[in-house]
Length: 255
Image (cartoon, rainbow, N blue to C red; front, side, top):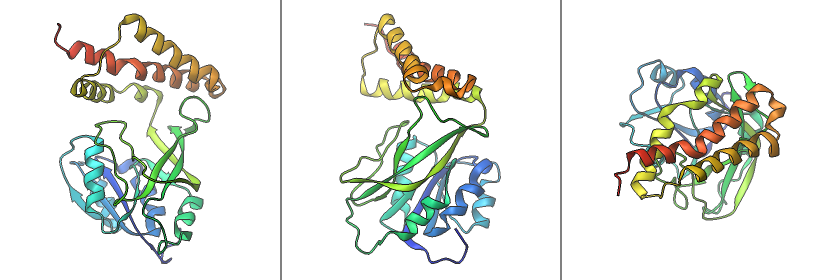
C-alpha cells in the first residue's frame, strides 16, 4: 500500500514478544488501517523501536496464553472492525487493497473474512501437506466475534457468514525445520488438556493417531512434493497429534 492513501475504519491488532525479525514487513501493508495496535508481553529486542517508527499504538501486558492475549488486544482497539494479524504474517498487496475496497459503512457486524495463509519455513514456501490450504478468520467485528481463550490454537468463533478475502498472507512461523518441534507449544497443549480433563488415549491409540497424521500429510495431501521439507512437516504433524496428549498423561495423577 502506498503511504498517504485514505485509511479504513479498521484497527489492525497484533500481539508481540521479540518480534523484530518480521515486524517491519508485517506493519507496512497495515497502513490501510486507521489504527495499528500492538500488545507486547516483554520484548527485549527492537520490537518497540520498529513499532514506534511506524506510528503504532503500544500497550503492554504479561503473556497469559495466546487466546487471552489476543482477546485483550481486540478490546484495546479503537474500532469495532478488527484485523488480527500475527507478528509473522505479511499481507500481500491484493489483500490490503481488498480491505481498502470494502464498504465499511454498510457492513453487517456478523460478517467476517478469512485470509489464506501461505506457510514458509525460512525462505521456502510449503505448498503441500496438512498446512495447505490454511484459511483463517482474521477480519471481523468484535461486537459479534471474538477469539477463544485457548492458550494455543486460538481462533475466532464465527457467528455469521465467512467470506474469503482476495489475496493471501505469507506466514513465517519457522526459521528452519528444527523449529517445527518446539517444546513450549506441546507443554501449552498439555496444560490445556489437563485443565479441561481430557482423557488421554492409550499407547495403541496414540500410535494410530501419529501414523495417520503422517500418512495424511505426506501422501494424501502430497507433502512429498515439497521434498525433504515435506517429510519433516508430515513428521511434525504426527508429533503434534500425540505429544501434547502424552505430556498430559505424564502430568495427570494416577488413579
